[in-house]
Image 1: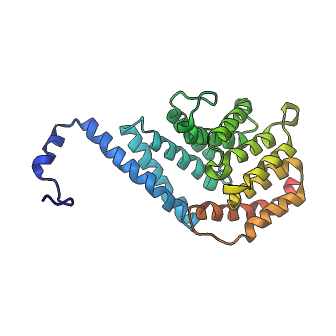
Image 2 (image 1 turned 90 degrees about the vertical axis):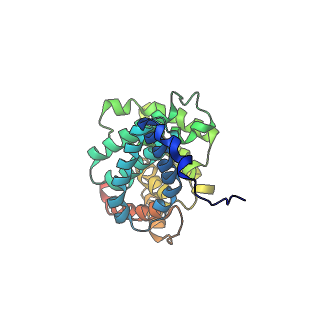
Image 3 (image 1 turned 180 degrees about the vertical axis):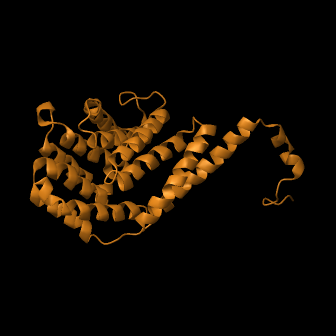
Length: 274
């Protein structure tokens, strides 16, 4: 009986010789992108933000190289969008907003490619992750470019996308759609529908269920809603909750550690914000 673990003979591999270089590159890209997809949890389980800050750019570049050979790979496009947006949010926007903006724009474009023509109005369940990262990147870009008219003009697009996400996959990325809605009401000028109280309501919902222990939700609650409402007590309470939280191993370890670093810096700026 042929062993199930027996390696294929050279004769079995001969047909590969006749594959075009393009097909070989695409096949290799798909195998590697699968490894990236299954390996991402290991990145987010890291407890050392500086290590990830130094290591992640090479992986982002690798994903771009793979996409050059397999440009329609939706899973890879979504992972790359998450990578660029996450890197900008965690490591760039507090230090270099211009550079962070470039990363957010790139992440938004990658997610838009993954949507492949789908919009907030037409997106299906299979488009939920691409729609989320496209919207997250857009919201993050707007937030650090509020002085640019073209960025402000994009604000109305946030709400329908977030509402569609609530219909498609409400708990995705630790209630991320609720955080986007909270940011939407915090960013939007009051005269154009901004409402800090509604922002608070959505961040409270973000802290339910799958988002309850996700510390970046609390950090964003303080940074966006508490500042917009000029609620100093809420600001301090949320940030102190982040700082006092016990470290938890698992896929939220890295963002939780980043949240602690960001919370400490933001708390030091309290007098500038209130």
